[in-house]
Image (cartoon, rainbow, N blue to C red; front, side, top):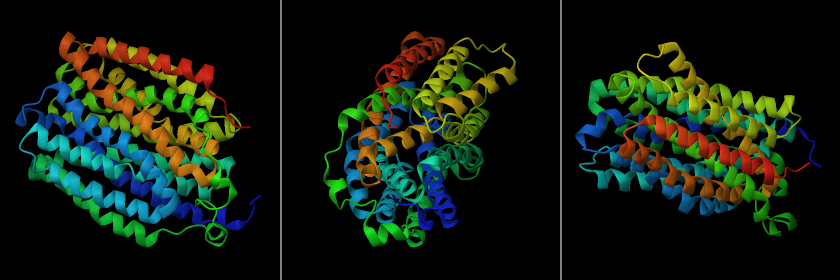
Length: 402
């Protein structure tokens, strides 16, 4: 049992800050897709379903690449894997800025998703190496706060950037920052001393040779897949929902997405602390509570009209961010604990593959429902039903480690 200072020293918080910054910068490119949607939708002559397909392209790539990316993270280590991810995200996001059509943008975002698939397995592996279980979900929540923080930053700075350099310039800027940060991360990353001396956290030794218990991961992976569908649908379509149904301008609809992302930053830390401290390290009950609250909030969005008070609408969007965008720190801690440090990368790859496959189908399906019915209310209610189904699966089939 490792109870030495390297994994407990103050330096682990500096490492956590570096990993969180990586997520902020990577997510800024990812969320540029939906934040800028009200600006490029008309110029590229896109339907709502096509806007959703951009996110699907991103997650389709993650579906195919995450398992392999996790396998590489176990072998290459965190620093090298993260470098590859940021460089690829940066180049492909910048390419999307030159898109003359739907097809060009679709391919660019698909390739950016390939790069992004390297970031989550590597960062999760890094957190599992530096933190013990009694603070793992908290640390994972802080790390995952970088994702909505990236969306929050993008929602705040992208619309003003559009006014200065256009949506193409704003998207290119997000790509350039990712490209450069990959080299900064690679230079600053350090593995724990214990890992370097004993090979912990890499695929070496008898533990790493054991086959991965795939059956144990399936309930968690499929249950959280419905939460990810809800997350991607929310952050993709909230700007369009606010613009088309609530009467917001394109500028303020994009800015309002920062409300959801701000809630997500609070949720990812808050749910992690609750799981570690309030629920004694249990993850399942926290995920189920988050899911049930998300069902209520999606139903709440379905009854919003232009006559609804603005503060109630924004409160629901904020709380939806807390719950449906804020759950992932707990789910990633769960997967890391089920897998163990040596197999965290490949286990995360498996989970993200399943989650991303669901998001690839579910996100444009939300837009398709709106296109066919002309009603966001129907789509929000359908989403609430899907999340409820995922909660039922988690309740019945997920078994936690003791």
